Image (cartoon, rainbow, N blue to C red):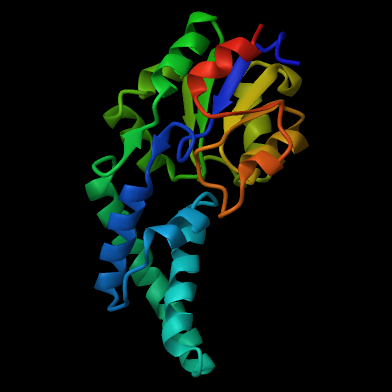
Length: 232
């Protein structure tokens, strides 16, 4: 199934870089700015992956429901006001700490080098805003592997919609069936299946609190350096 691969699309958070530390710092500084209590890493791990807007709204909902479950009308009013303030605060804090509390997963560099040595076209496609994704890849020394980098705001829709994958395939000049998607979540798998791209899933990433091995894929890998054996 992977013998005719011409290009590879790689997710970022949870696939190449463990960014939970960055999310934890930025989110909790944002919550402090709007006088709300912090969230723990377990909540963040189960929530990331659908874009920053979803992350912030989910975090505000979670914290404010805990505080104001018995005052629904007041909760709605605070939520509406807090989101705009929280979004601006989150952007500022994330840009300030981007990459400082994150680390490249073991095997990622070796895996990317293998893909590049095979002459495959590489693109990074993430739901993270492009203004966050590009500096992170540069800070971690990964940007040079990719001819194109696309974020959650690069197209009209985000993963799990197939549109970002289809558009990325077009830019890479490769048909979807000859373009491998490498990700860590059901979002990546759902988008890949709908776009007719084969997909390989990493077992160490973030999948909304569920075991990714239950999600259909060509393979489930514990290290990206193992990708070479799948390519024949």
